[in-house]
Image 1 (tube, rainbow, N blue to C red):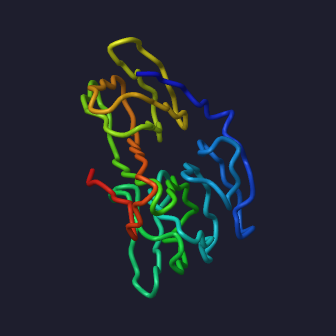
Image 2 (image 1 turned 90 degrees about the horizontal axis):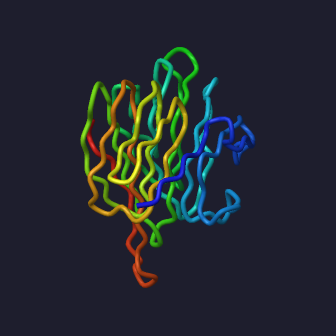
Length: 207
């Protein structure tokens, strides 16, 4: 298993697709892809006012609230409340979505994959002491939402802190140990055969 740490200070800052704010791009594939032609993308943004989400045709999205009071999303006329305590919310990024803040500004984690090419799953993973889990996917990314901890594999131990992201490749079904205190998000990504034309490939897992 190979592990690369993407440090928080190196995340690329850029405008939202709709120009309504700024986002920090954590990871993107292919490397250097734009918001128009990525196959998968992981980013973080602050939402400070109500308004529409950017529309991404052919993309599936999972959203998590990292900080703030929470947000109400109106997705194609159906309202869903999302807070820090909620499981990540999966929905189509080409659906019309309007956001309304519950109170203060929020910071969110946004995972997107191109439908029919890649699938993703996002799981909120609190760490207090030692946490054991198995990872499935290629790649698997572990995003530190808060705190600091050690990521322990059979080959090495890596320290990472708030808003750092570990990218792991060649790790399907391998055990992983986290020690420390904080909250992480485990993001699994997998490719589909070129002929796969399924309508949606995103899922969220409960806390």
